[in-house]
Image (cartoon, rainbow, N blue to C red):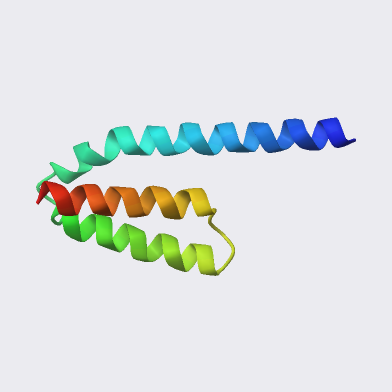
Length: 78
């Protein structure tokens, strides 16, 4: 039973890491779209929404850290 829980936990972490990597690769492309706001505005809004999801128990700490990193990158690029 314990082994199955460990396997599930590892799989879940790998899935989140892969999903975050996927979005990190594609977010810069979205910033180039003429229909989107500025990268800084989008990153700040993403962080705000991620924090709300985290407070509601629907997002992981990893997602919050990723959103914070994206916002910092957008600030530094501007």
